[in-house]
Amino acid sequence: MRTITFIGNGTMALSIAKGLKGKYHIELVGRNMKNLDTFETQLGTKINKYLLKDFDMTGKTILLCVKPGNVEEVAKLVQGKADLLISVLAGVSTKILKKYFKPKTVVRSMPNLAASTGKSMTTLTGDAKAKEDGIVILNAIGRTLWLESEKELDVATALAGSGPAYLALIAEALVDGAVKQGLKREDAMATMRGLFNGFASLIQNVHPATLKDDVMSPGGTTASGYGALEEGNVRASCMNAIEKAYKKALEL
Image (cartoon, rainbow, N blue to C red; front, side, top):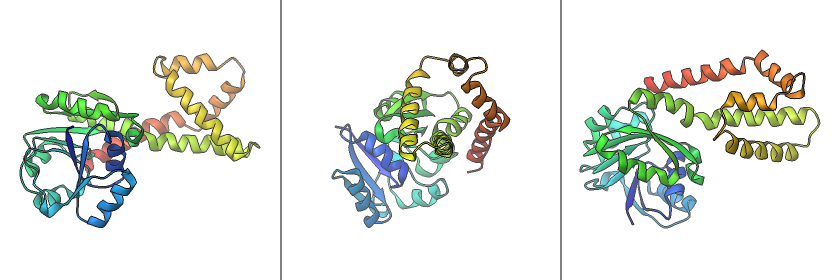
């Protein structure tokens, strides 16, 4: 079984590790052994753990999950050159990764938190000769899409990478709306979860506009509620959220 070495032990690293667990051997590298032990406990399986200052990347497949601003510092602490470096860092270009880590090949990727359940939508780009390898590894945590440029990846980061937070806001707001009108919160939560589960399957094969039109009958309840969303500029706000997140990725 192939070994994947995680550098970084944050939330995204844990989500990806949960998705890869059982399919790959997992190693973890970080600054603090206590934090590495906590990661191991949360992952629920024994893993090899190393401190950054003691770790040699030579010949390894690395999954880089540190904060974008810590790239240079982390690179100074590790030794050797990885065979493949897969980065999940928003806004950090392959040029920067090659400059500091000097791996044989680089793939930039943007999974999301659904990796922990094998349902991530992960976009990738990078060295063409590492394309197949990167796709195979990240297919283990969900669906993948290889993009032809880093600009496209940065835009996709704003959509698929940040998207769970946007949808969580919408889910919470819908539940609050139902509670406001008199539905018990636990029933509103159950209804919302069923809604999202069903919607996830529907949207795979139907264009959003078609799905909306199929639900919205003339003068009906959906039309009334949809009109309220348009009055609240929900469509424009969603588009603006993608723009803001994309521009932030470029700043990192």
